[in-house]
Length: 263
Image (tube, rainbow, N blue to C red; front, side, top):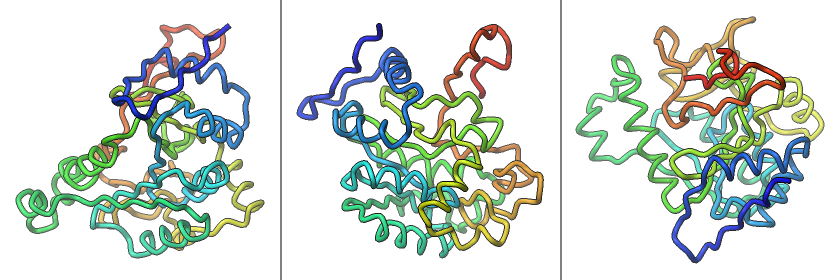
């Protein structure tokens, strides 16, 4: 029988979660519906000081609605790269108001860094990795200071780089929660309709995965939902997500490439 996940004393210094902690939580909540899982994690402080990170993209409303139903006091963090669509900023404000979150935080790039490393504002056009680093990765790192855990909206179906996505994983000693990791596109659509959630205004125009305006394009029918991100570049992630810890398929060969971490 798995040992119960340890609770976190928020008075103490931030503890380092281990893979064993993530394994215990994955085993405990296997088969448990997402809302019940979130309510339990928050009520029992299983993740310590936790916040949800949202891009306020086309699918973000589902996770935010679930988190709000579980605990509206959980902080919501948004990284404003200063290259966002105006529609995304408006959508953020709409969802925060609708779900009644009490702690909405926005983090932005450091002005001096932008002045030195992206004076023209065009770094995205010749060095998208470097642009993401100064506009998203570094601000996200600051936003996570003081957190024991954070909640991500990643789903396994979004891209081949997100296959075998566990509900709980460990990244740099922090617990990382992927509550919608095993949800399908159909699951999301059903939830949107049932809860009558507002849609991102750009979705109807063919933007299925929305990031910064210069690096986001429309997705053609049949394309990977994230095909519109960094189109023309050998790049599929902004850098805030580390490689996924693989979940071996039941009865599968651990040496099979299909059961290995995706990098």
